[in-house]
Image 1 (cartoon, protein in one colour):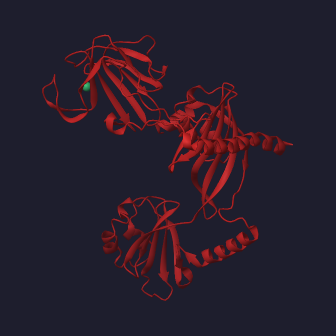
Image 2 (spheres, helix red, strand yellow; image 1 turned 180 degrees about the horizontal axis):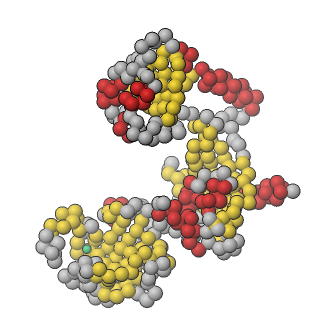
Image 3 (tube, protein in one colour; image 1 turned 90 degrees about the vertical axis):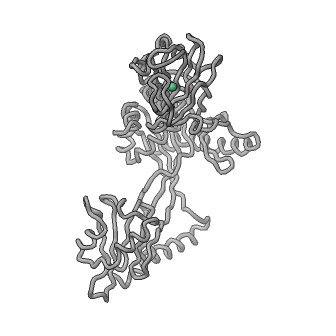
Length: 422
Ligand SMILES: [Zn+2]
């Protein structure tokens, strides 16, 4: 189970009251014309397979078995591999056959007239959208993509216990729960959802060949937590999409630049080859040291939950804070912790979590600040997310119009619900 998974299952149980689906045709307004187009399209699809006219071929479709490779899957079907090995080496940049995955579908096409039963095409479905074509008649390998259509959907639910399971029970992809949780990472504590919390969500699903393949994006959410509504609206500025609340504030919170408010200097930066000042050996320094007077308050650079408030020989007194599914920070060599700082404690950006000291392996009073992204210690100066800017003034009119439309649609979800229950 991934950490994210735990967050959702640990979060709260949720029971869906209803799901109302709206289907949007992907193109055109003239439905009659659309009908015609769809019919033509279906006919075309019936004649082609991965863009190949299938009439002249015998087709075998199967899934990759455990430990099966390109050669073995061909021989499993009594197909002559021909030059496929040379070809896959030559086109390794298009697709590395070693990354073929268990249980992914593949198709072999053999010319009806071929008594040697040599594969003319081998198509591997890398994902539900992307596929790789080994064209053995023209000695080439290329990538293809299936046509993706979208469906706009509504979903409403009330919290009673577990978010992911209930979405699953309602036939909704659990990925929707993860996406929602990550949008509210800095706003709602998913560990503390209440019995009567409820939400409404407008989102877009991706479909391939009439089958669901994933969430495209969430457009709007109204999450009522402790009787207070928290809105999230997807909005693009300069082609970059972000989630904003109804006051046009970015849902993502930027981190503070330093774990100290004042009176510090950076004494050592993140450095992969540093001579350790105490151990006198070459040891990477994966943190940033802020020298400051003994007792200076240390603050958390972002909202989060205390994972550890502990002591080790090297770190001295240290605090580790999880901010969201992506970022974790750690603060070392404290003289002491701030009162109430212990695992599970929820902290807000700027809260004092401890005081500068020189416990553990330290030459003088300083705080060693460490920054993790997806479980890897990184240089915060290089990877800290960009500031979470609100909607720009010049886009406010467009934003407000969009929000008005989405809010009305969210309001309507409840009404559709009542109507459908009658
Ligand atoms: Zn350090």
